[in-house]
Length: 181
Image 1: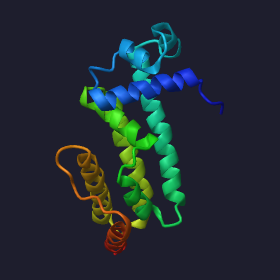
Image 2 (image 1 turned 90 degrees about the horizontal axis):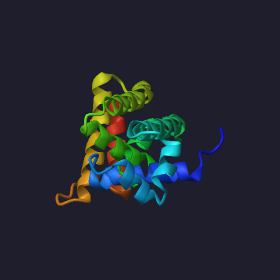
Image 3 (image 1 turned 180 degrees about the vertical axis):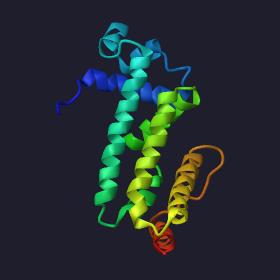
Image 4 (image 1 turned 90 degrees about the vertical axis):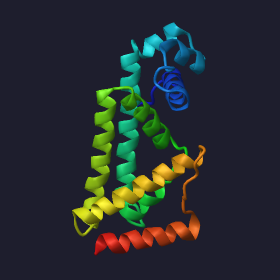
């Protein structure tokens, strides 16, 4: 598969950044073109409308999530450890795409909401064979949610605990013991 044109990626990066930093209403075609350093015509060459731009971002998210699921399934430490460790945001491309798509979902974009649900289901399907039952799977998913949420709060006014190093190792070991029965 060939790489997308650089200008197209710059536009998606700018759109994503505006969504995360300023919200869905601020992410207009004009603002995105300005932030990407391209003309409005240049943006429209790659994305014919705001709907197409949103679809491009959601496609980026799905591609990143597919790669994440593959990495999780192949992780040497196992899917549970990989999943929990990667739940503490690191401002990587997947994190930014999730946040930006969440902004679209909050703005009423049904495709964004569906994509986020689908990705969560992909993660659950990958983790399920490594858990004793549905309750254990819920435990893994909810601990992941808590890690992600608390990490997101640490950038704001209410810091949440985000274990690192030995503390993360201990948490992963505890959750794996519980999840595997």
